[in-house]
Amino acid sequence: MSTSSNIPPPSSNGVFSVSASILIDAPRDKVWQILLDFPKYREWNPFVRGQTIVSKTDKRPLNDQTPREGAYLLMSPVHIPPTMDDASVWLSSSSLELITVIDHENYRCSWRYVSLPHWLLSADRWQAVSTVLGGGTKYESLIVFTGLAAYIMRLFLKSGLQKGFVEMGEALKNRCEKA
Picture 1 (cartoon, rainbow, N blue to C red):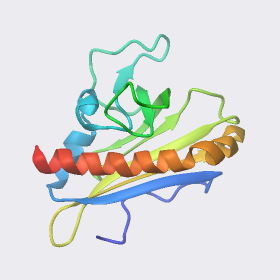
Picture 2 (picture 1 turned 90 degrees about the vertical axis):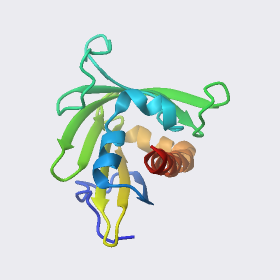
Picture 3 (picture 1 turned 90 degrees about the horizontal axis):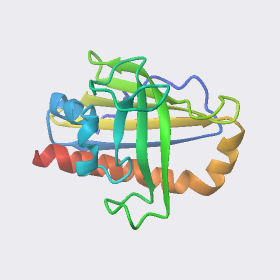
Picture 4 (picture 1 turned 135 degrees about the horizontal axis):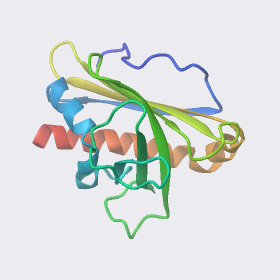
């Protein structure tokens, strides 16, 4: 796998970060298309079971589910540990995110957690896909947490989040290679 990253360096190391990457035997365009097809996450993603573009005020789903900068993204449910079975999860949460980057030219996207005040908890997540020398696509994801609540999250949720990132990458690989 390529050692270079398509994710820009984080603006801060934060309190903690979680990352994962995986090599996928599929064209970059196909991986990118599946990654941004939020309505179909429930079909394949054991970690973030649903992603919906919503209105900021009442969190109602918008008719247009095309990811775009400035749109609000409701991630719900988020499963820790990751599972396709909604009944067997010990922690299921939701998260309101502001999409900050949809970069089709460089095949990367980012969003920021906005459910709580920034000083209490903030998280910036990047995802990117890159063509790998010799064929295939590298998927990578990174999230950096800051704020007071991040210290508590690091103690209780870091390993579960790490497992979620890894399993999401594996599920994306499986979806892309079979689709």
